[in-house]
Length: 448
Image 1 (cartoon, rainbow, N blue to C red):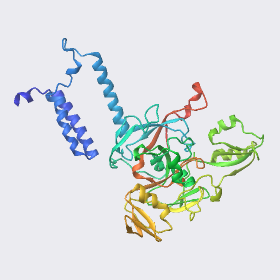
Image 2 (image 1 turned 45 degrees about the vertical axis):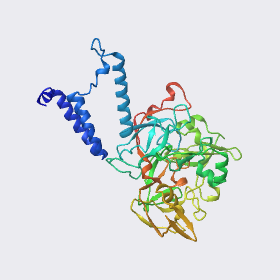
Image 3 (image 1 turned 30 degrees about the horizontal axis):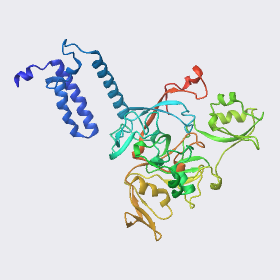
Image 4 (image 1 turned 90 degrees about the horizontal axis):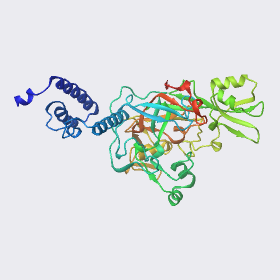
């Protein structure tokens, strides 16, 4: 034993102590202390060398390192570092829709900060690394649901706050129709339209675990415990009027003085063609505008009339509005008040408000919910109140009339939160080419 310790190099001992200290802090952060056994591996790697860790890289004849094994080691190390970064710190996403314009545009490539709220540990154990829910160049699932892990989030350095832009798994994305071509429709919207039996008879159904649902990005408007209301398109949080971010936009109806809106005008206002609607019958355009762009157009000679869109009558709403109950005559611009559930909060439940919280109780928190004989039963017991086991959030897109958000499908559970949108590192305009395709003014922009 003295001979063994006598061979230890002081430099290697320093490396071992530093690596061990970092690893112990990591284990403490994770809370999985059984991982401490790996310190024995570190000790052998840096100090004792009972296991010939590098022998496979050496030529048996000359004893020199071989090129290919060295290259393989470098690639494996790079992959391991990228995997750790993606899991615990940062993940890259690309924005496919206009729901967050003008804060974030279609074609923006962003980094999401996972450390801020704490990294969520993988919930699907058997999954292809560096994929989400499908294999590359295929529609086949990139995961197997043989073993699913319980929700676990490591400690972060902050919590979700009002107006944070968060990335999360789409709550209604647990059941999908792979052959559905209209991306604006979901399994649940179709169930409400044509019935579950019809869907099951004509479509293939795919069920996804929480961390394999599609990724969405929205602005958090309601925190756990908040009371939220929307009046004439304006959000009120606990009775206080929202602080409207500068880039938020609403739809407006307008008539162009020349009868048409030129592409140069739309480009100057940074308006996406995807959100422009034109009614040929009365020559009226419907376009999304920020307050600044609205004021600019109103003062110009380019339009003959302009009026803000407001959805007032549920009968004329273009989308089904949460909570999909005839007793709640809500629209996307007028809804509430409603209480956003908070962990350990107890709320009275009755036949009037159960539509607001039925999905939380039965799906997200996995209880057996039944309504019979004008009474509510949870796990077989008649209930007049319910205590929530998780935090929930109410989110909205900045493109208020062109966003599929909590107004249309309800609350976001805490275990669906991925991280906070942090930085736009690349921004590409889909309808342009060459250097003009790059939006230089959006590059390396902090997302607020």
